[in-house]
Length: 610
Ligand code: SF4
Image (tube, rainbow, N blue to C red; front, side):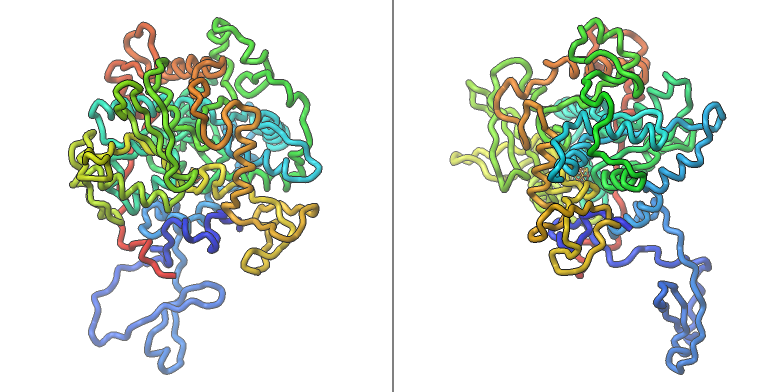
């Protein structure tokens, strides 16, 4: 069984909250009887096959085994989400419920058209997954480097011709919408409609962690859906209408860089009760997609016909002239048939959330100056916008990746906002003072004693290095079948490629391999003006909206908003941030935002000793 690389015991310093035991190891079918003081006590034993037995203590003493086999509990994904102990140890359950095997089973059982029970199978692939695949192709000594565009075309060819998917998208248009909605939410919070600083919400590793261990942080976490879930909305609420289908007549698979995205897709908020369907039906990791390719004999390093043609595809099939060659009028005319692919958002390879806000705040004037300060490493950087004349800091943001840094940020945000930072769902919400207003006691400051401005925004990601280093990404190829601690490992069955051309020494399949993450980053930014890992301070490079693709994406996003929310009155010069009538705004909140809830905890995961 292939587990997330994030689970390897060699990387415990960034482990989430390990639990020693599941809360539902066995099913208790009968209510506990009131205890009779004279009654015999029992113990539970586990045999070598993993079966549980209830054994009377008396029979143990006398060695007369009288035992009752206990039924193994069925642990559903919701049980795991409600469990106070862990995120990661639930992954074995997730792998069963959301796995590439599940996808293959669905495809095998999906009736062909025109059977009325046929579901349209769709795949949405994260750009970080494409970068990981590109890195794995480029890592072999014989391969020539490939672009994300080429990899996307090869993945499309595999999914469509071998697996039978009808549409294959990447998730960058969904991310474009997520960034627009997220900027709108930030503006609302600035106006006092919500707490500041705003903490990003695209990483379910971080959000689930906050729900389980830092409930006091929940008011700060952005309500905007992640690109995966916005893609779910697009597929099940927007595209399906164009195709004249109901949400449950589409089977939507997403390919993501981590296992935590499986948890995210399984959240109750993303389940459509009316049609008994999820916005994303199944999530597989990059490693699982790569494994499917290997199992089906598909060689991703072999080019496919037309992969260098930069023409765009019309709703996943056919091709049309290059988007960058379209005029604005042509963009308007093509809104119904084109979903822009691989839209670049300068900033970070984890979604560019912080940088999209910086771009918005900088606007088109040169009044603000951007400065970057490295706090600990490239994983913890502060970005400030200072007014050139008054020298007033008008925005302070941070990029914070990895759980070690995240702990520091949680403490800092709690201190600045005057909330008690605790562990577990018992984290105190009541202490939140002045929503939207920072009530700083002191956290540094200048020599004159003026307190340092607190954060307005933090882009939080659970993985060190961000999504390029997600636990579901492809591991660097290895030759040795022995891991760093000297244990024999069956790498191939864990989805790790073996490369006979590589020298043995120093090669490992360790999660978090910096050199490998750097390579994935390079692939992610390959051929783009923004170098990894962060944008330059060059004003021009930070601007969004100058290229045709992003302009087209803005127009199409607006179309999506109008078609899904149906504003009662048309708004002149409408943009994504325009306010619509109340009913349409309520729809917007349902379609593009989400909610969180604290998970009651009886176990403090971090207190568990291994
Ligand atoms: Fe997943 Fe890691 Fe990215 Fe979070 S940072 S979304 S856990 S890959």
